[in-house]
Length: 130
Image (cartoon, rainbow, N blue to C red; front, side, top):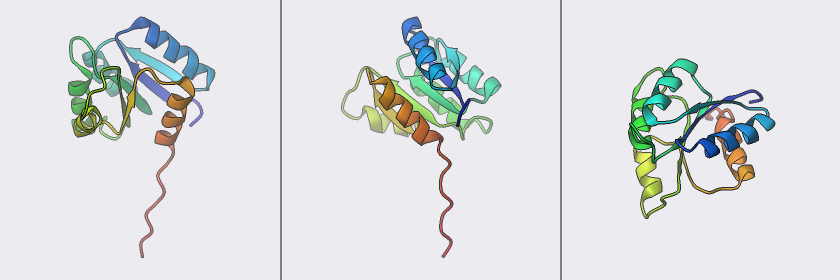
């Protein structure tokens, strides 16, 4: 998990920089994308260990970017954490229907975000075959 590559897809430069600063300080590598199309392209090129996807992105929104990432055989297994500051009833369900593995309302505490990332990166336990 140390050195895991996190792709942060957010159109707000200050969010990108805060995420980069905080996550690199915790031992992660960070790549950023400014819009959904760039997030899809960087997911294909860099094969990050996890993607933090803002749902309100220009060019292509995070909903569609997540769908495309999860439909592509090269990127479908990359965990996607959907982030949104516009939390409405059903937002979490809609994000999961689009393919997100986790949903987090913004703003969130950096420590909480890091804990969720680490939990998502933990290898899943093999199923007991009894």
